[in-house]
Amino acid sequence: MAYYEKEEQETVIIYESATRLWDIYTTVPKHINRLKSDDIATILEAETDGEGKTISLRIQLEKLPSSYVFNR
Image (cartoon, rainbow, N blue to C red; front, side, top):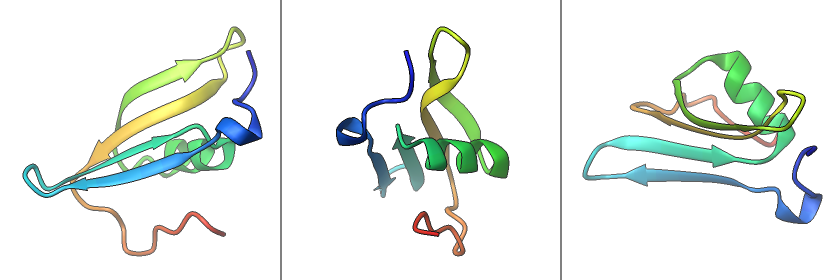
């Protein structure tokens, strides 16, 4: 399995006020690579293909960096 098709790729960022945590889920390759390389939080879930490539990622963190913008 390769990356998700373009039509299926998404990044969802949710702030849960009750827990004061940010929850980020993505299937966008560029976002996956950035989240893994920035090492800003512990990975909660990761889906990999048969070759070991990460094709989806979910992390949770207390503080989203103010400079964190995905449209670069």
